[in-house]
Length: 626
Image (cartoon, rainbow, N blue to C red):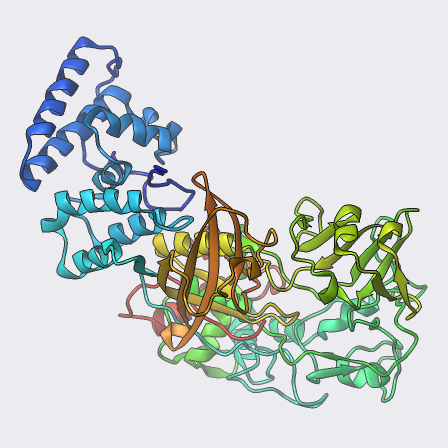
């Protein structure tokens, strides 16, 4: 097997690589068939074969870089995008017999030097699907040519990766330091709770109240930020404008108005003991929909609800918050460190560093709305599906799913079906192989019934244990750290969402079975069921988050065959999904969609004063809660 160092879609600052040397490109690029070009390339090739010292090789590489530019012009590299493709690298490096890693190293080298960031980019690219022996040879060639230009720390990082003691060890980290904050919970401790300025964005004396005072001072009219934030989060059930506040950490069906803050009866006040059956048997929202999936409404404009016929359930809202916003803000902004005082309507108002973090979290929506990158699917605790051969479709719970063994060979994921991307599917043939009746509890009736495999077309269950695909996690995690930005990871596969930004990963790969793996590889279960006859690579990644104060280890395996990953799986608890803003650039002219009076100019002023003389961020941040 001879895999080359892989180019991926990482947003490396390669837009100007191979063009950053300041070389002049002739107006008319020379043809690759030009006799002069061919002669110069042959001469360089001969010199390269006879070169002995790293300095001599680097000088030849610089001449070769100039020659490639003269021959191809800017449009000849990366199809005009500035990003060289594998074909570009092959064309550039083959004439001198260079490996792709050396070609990339040449591209990244600034002033003839390879930095620690460059080495991390190269290791990150090589680590896609796991680092092979061939890729180690390529990286070793890069080391031999450029090692005397590297710092001791950079060389040590590369040397650690190149060790041949039966495994591979490498550490990748974000370019800049991360920061975290509270998750700014939406839930309070009662209908009359004023909130805490340091914990709740809806607090009556908090950041948004202060922003309203500054807004009125500068614009001559009251701001609406606090009023909008304090609208009940569940107002949408009643067909009203919603916000980001919940009175209680648990919204009860038998006391809906007081615990949700929603005026369900529409009488202009919050009444006690109002019963609303808004949850189904799985504790999900029970909303009636038409055949096209659109929610139905009653004559008062409220959503039609079809619960389980009881009002004895409650909805946990204690985890609801802004951790996703904190995560995004942490990937982009420097960390606010100092309080800032500015003039408001009635005099000076002081914003604490935490309050400024909250405002940056809100403003991150303007960046997230431009697009995100992500992997994995959120686990939503959706009901299981059972489809009979006569076309009948049932939703509920497969009570003997463990006996059936969903992760058997032949299981597949409904990746092409919207809303069902993380569902495991077993068809009739695989059910017959299992030889077990399906014991199914129908959500609509609560009835439990057994179905023979020969009567069933297929069953489907949301995958809580193998989604996201371990290989996708591995490649995305190393890719994002390689480009220096990191990302946000939902570490828990349950229905509650806890977003944390990760800032580093200490990764160990081995082909030898570690103690945490079963002795019999047939006991492994992966995204595509048990492994086949490919080569297994075991991986343990220790990730740091919360500004480096927290850590979490993930253990998984990758199965490779014919140079490709064909399956992968988790050895213990898996993360749920990961994401980050696609474009981290800050545009202070953009308003926050839900808060039109949240003045970007004021946030910018607070941010700059609170972070004056602080080092740049742009790596990743951390948050807790949703």
